[in-house]
Length: 477
Image 1 (cartoon, rainbow, N blue to C red):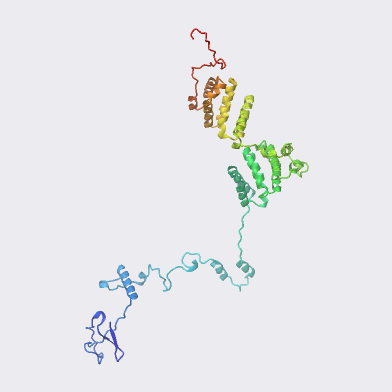
Image 2: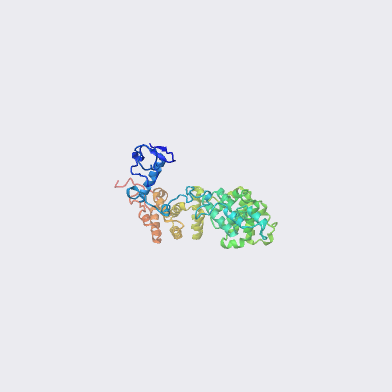
C-alpha cells in the first residue's frame, strides 16, 4: 500500500514503494522548479507523481470486459495500448439508448417506435387537437356527440332469395341426419319475424321433389318447430301461399294437390293448425279466388280428417318408408307389385313402385321373388315378362349388378328346397338363364355357376314328379 503525506506547500508526497512496488527514479524536477525542503532522504530530487486511484473488484471487472471487447474489434494496438475508435462506428450496432437513459426498449403501450400505429385511441386525441373551439364554425353538439360514441353491432337483413337458399341447404342436411333440434338452432341464427312463414312453405316445396321418407321427415319437422320457432299463424300463412301457387306447382309436380292435402291433414292431426283451415273452405277470405287444384288439396285434407278411424291413422299418411319397415312387409309389397306387373305388363308402373319402396339395398329380394314366381308359373310368357323386367331394371340402373347377382345366387342356393315343390325347376331355370344371357344383362360368373341336376335320379322330368313304381314280379329282379 502507498502512503501519501501532505507537504507544507499543499503537495502530496509518496512514502514507501510506488505503483507496482517501484520507485520513480527518472522523475526529475524541471529547471527552475522549487525543490521540496525537508524531503526525506532517498526520495529523489524531483517531485513525486500523482498517485493512481485504487480500483475495487467491480471496476476491475468493467475494465477487463472493456479490454476484452476492444481486443476482439482490433481496438488494442501494440502492447495492449488502446486504439482510437470513431464514435459513429462504436455506436453503430448498439441497442442502448442514444440519450444516455433507458435500455433502448420500445415505449409502453405501443406508442413509440418506427412503423407502429401508436397508442390505442391516440387518433381521437389528434382530431381533438386539430379542432379549435374558438372557430366560428365550431359545432359543440357534434363535438360532444363524437366524444360519446357508442358502437353497436348491426346485422344486415338478408333478402328473400338468400333466406330461401339458406333454408334449403339446412333442410338438405336435415334429410341426412334427421335432427330437428339442430335445424331449429340453425334457423334461429338467420330467421326474423317477417321470414318465419317462409319456413313451412320452403319445406313443403322441397318435399314435393323428394320421396315419401323425406315427406315424413318434413311433417315431423313442422310439428317440432311449432311453438319453438314458428307459430300456428306462420304455418297457415305458408300453406296459403302454397295454395295460391298451386297452378304453378302442378307443372313440375302433377300430384302436388294430393301431397299438399296430406301435409295439411297431418298438420291438423299434429295440432299445429286448427281443423277449420281444411273444412271451412267457403269461409276463407280467398275462397272466390281459389283455383281448382287448391280446392282439390283442401278436399283431400278434409277427406282424410273425416275418416271414421280418427286422426291416429294420419301418422302413417306417408307410410313407413325405407329400412324402417319389417322384412316381411317389404317382401309382401314386392310380391304384390310383381303380381300387378304380370297382369298389366306395365314396366313404367313397376319401376315407379320399386322406387317408392326406397330400399336399394334390398333389391336382391325382388330378384329372388321374381325368379321363384317365374318357376312356379311354369309358363313361357311369364319367363319373357320377368326377363323384360330385369332388362329394364338393368338399363335404368334401378337395380345394381351386385343386387342382380346376389338375387340369382340366392336362388341357386335354395334350389334343393325349391325342387321339392317344383320338380322342373332346374330345367326352367336353365332356360331362363339362357334367355337372360341373350338379353345381355347377366354377369358371366352367374351363368357359369348355374347349378345342374344329376342325370341319375328316380323322378323323371316329364312325369309330374311321380315316383316310378317298382315292379317286384319283373324277371330281372
